[in-house]
Length: 443
Image 1: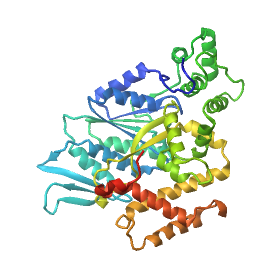
Image 2: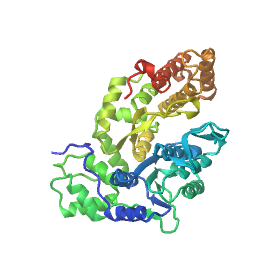
Image 3: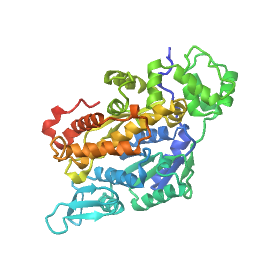
Image 4: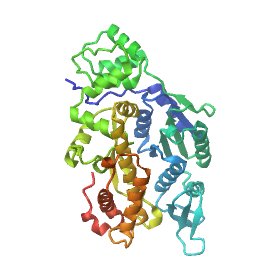
């Protein structure tokens, strides 16, 4: 018998759309965009396509995070292209040996020679991408998927400009697929991802519920308007032997509420408290949750592990943030395990969150981000930096100037100092591999 919230087997194939994407990839067109409202399955389609082609061609997915900004999008793109170049990629008898992506729009590229043109340190990110694609072999193919492009900017036209520029930069052997909530049409290369047909709703429901009549399935499809997200939540919050009850009013909100009621109370509280965070990880949650909230590292690890089995949570490996190649760091090979709660559910959770707690979590996460940046900016500092105390005081002053929290909820100087030490210790293997045994266990 299936259990509520198991999150397994609740994805429906969309052969018509996947066939269109396949034809696009094989046709080597410039750019394909998938668009649709939240929760209709755009990310799942990208996953399906990526899994289908992985092994045949190189595949990379770039997920746009909240507040990434246009510059970060281009940096991510440059790294993905560079990482997929053959080890001995050469052009005009020169081998590309490295790229560096500094603060702002500055960047550099280096080659395997010792002459005056061994490197070009002051270029734009676009120049770096052009250099990298110039080394990409004609007989090699790369599929790059950029997900959630609507998060790049609140201005849709800026997003259009970014997609156009990226498309223009890429050669024909690098295929670009983007997806997001914004409508974007460039000739015939845009596909709308819509809601489920009656047949798709029926397949999804009968895969879970044992005894549902055609009439009952048709009623559920009509009331939920065939929306994949809410059909999925309905499945996850009901036992397979039951006939799911559809609320009469506020259907979407009530289904989300029932889904949350179907998971353990502590999990529900954890999701609500952490809902302002763009993603969850053991380290981030350990740093951000105040001491008076009773979630220790073991509890957080267990909750994240349990939530990862639910279809509303996406689990993936993400590289450590703010690794700056200009600082002599080798190509990063350390990852967080990140857990991404569906944006629609996050927004719903925040509606039911105490405003003061929301401010506390956001400010603590902002300070975590600042500390993480400073670890890299001042690494020859780490634990030995002579002005380290002054740096910690600067972080504390920044918090005091910008926070609107009452005194009892503000972050203390000692907390910032402790946070900086923890982050430094976690990143130590990137800078000093021989001291990696000193780092915290990475989960």
